[in-house]
Image (tube, rainbow over all chains, first blue to last red; front, side, top):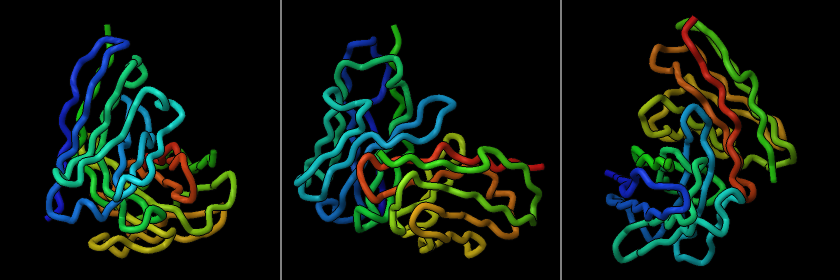
Amino acid sequence: EVQVVETGGGLVKPGGSLRLSCTTSGFIFSSYGMNWVRQAPGKGLEWVSSISSGNEYRHHAESVKGRFTISRDNRRNALYLQMDSLRVDDTAVYYCARDHGSEFYGMDFWGQGTTVTVSS
Amino acid sequence: DIQLTQSPSFLSASVGDRVTITCRASQGIYSYLAWYQVKPGKAPKFLIYDASTLQSGVPSRFRGSGSGTEFTLTISNLQPEDFATYYCQQLNSYPRTFGQGTKVEIK
């Protein structure tokens, strides 16, 4: 059974940092692209970052570029999101999600999310 | 960046109804569109990919269609568990934008 579990959320002051982790099981992690998607309170889904299966490329939304970095460890079946220079508008539930095979198909397995609150 | 516009933003329907949600892309995206269902406090659920291919395990009352710039999600015989918010997402290029969502509520 595919499992995706996010951890690392919490309360942080503006300008602070957090590192989110996503641990996975039930599939060959190194064969799949992975993503971070967030949902701010009362708002819609927002794509944040993507990384290819073998770490060949990474993409970030303009709203987080230069502040957030996606990475992965294929030996540990884990995905990460390093978040620096956090702002109040980064407050959201952050989801880790697996690509459905091809990067053109969407995201088939999602975790339950981890909550990040940026507040003074 | 490719913008996705969903309509309507909100719709009220009854159990057994057929509802249709439209997703329009600001430029052509072939068939690289996915649909998701989101309920409060739950992980998003992957419904459809490649505009019209039903994900395994998703009931056949869900149907996706379209290509290029105009896409639809149709839910036939609406069930109580279908009341949720639905999002389209384009996978043609980065950033992988989502539509703003369509909330389907019980009439």
